[in-house]
Amino acid sequence: MNNEPNLFGIAEKLVEYGKSKSVDEIQVSIANEDEFTVEVRNGEIERLTESVSKGVSIKLILDKRVAIASTSDFDEETLKFLVEDAIERAKLSSQDEFAGLPDEFYDTSQEIDLEIYDPLLEEIQPDTKINIAKETERICLSDERIKLSEGSFFQSGVGEVFIANSKGFSGYFKSSSCSSGVYLHSADENNSYEEGWWTNSVDFASLMKPEEVAKIAINRVTRLINSRKIETQKVPVIFERPMTSMLLGFLASCLNGHSIYMNQSFLAGKLGQKIAGENISILDNGLIKGAIGSRPFDREGVPTRKLTLIENGFLNSYILDTYSSRKLGLKSTGHASGVTNFYLTNGNSSPEEIIKSTKKGLLLTRTIGQGTNPATGDLSRGAFGLWVENGEIAYPVAEMTISGNLSDILNNIEMIGNDLTFDRSITGPTLKIAEMTVAGL
Image (cartoon, rainbow, N blue to C red; front, side, top):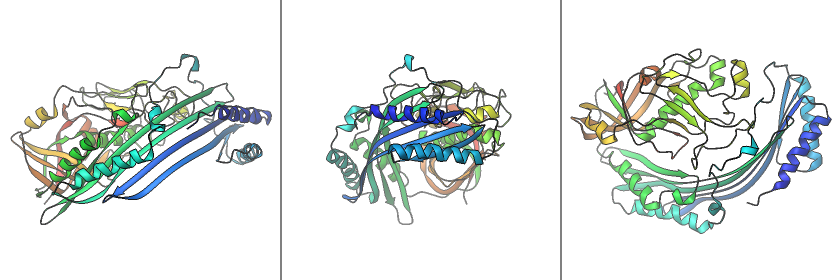
């Protein structure tokens, strides 16, 4: 990808054109992206795509009326027409007293390097990326316990973001990402089990090697062989790191400002209140160097920050963009693009110590389904895992459902692991919940 400074010129020129048409406020955003994806199954390429995309989006406000328009056509006359058409559509929309651009913007004079761009990803040849996917799957299929491959993949992307607006802000950043993974099937006489693993990074050098990904994926799928059914009961549940990410993703949706002002979250109206145990602190930090979710500013130009959402159990903040913050009488937290690096802070126990502390319970390794309700906090999902007895893994279990309420879960986390890793944008360490319902036979 070649850096295209003329894209800044296009954005700024469109802002000036909008101002000449007497709009009250206008923002122009341009995204320039290169993406590569390969999917391999049984040693053969099933999908191979390389794409270059470029698009411009316009948001304008006229008398508290909003219109949004976008195009991938960068012809000058087309872009001018886009502005003019948006103005006409804005005149037809309803007034909204909360509409408008932000009041705070990223200070480009204090720019810091977040280390979110790896130039090597633009130099690596497609054959290298294809071979990573093929090698990962090959290693897995060499294990006789693996009955089937659902496929392996490698993805990479490099993107540029340009934003300019009528309040004088002009901002730019470039970022990259890459990931690889594999999904497998193992089986016993009665059942087939699907599991896998993937790795994610800003830079190529930090990506797990095919041998590492394959080893983890093989272990995760083969440990489920000969799974048993269990009776319905209430027991402690240990969440592996990927399951903690699932739980925190649910929490993030409940903290979203739009859900809050629409009263579609059980956390609405609870700012400043104790909603979790004293051992719970949850942050969103978009300034962690080299982390997958880091960025200098959101899609409105508002700076990202280190934000403590829950501190020692107390709810300090919601996840807000400009509009939701105004609806709630608060300030934007720089989350118009969603969460950055959303995480539960580390505890003091190793995953092994957490398992050893459990007389009887479930080590949750995978869930399926969409059984979450932000309005109530209720959670119910199909589950797979490992049964724990007397502090040791006893046997795999399947065909069950775990259920509970997020409020109860947050207030009943007995132990927190020390294995936090920023390998995804929503992450956390291993957790032990004092009690959840596990529905089986």
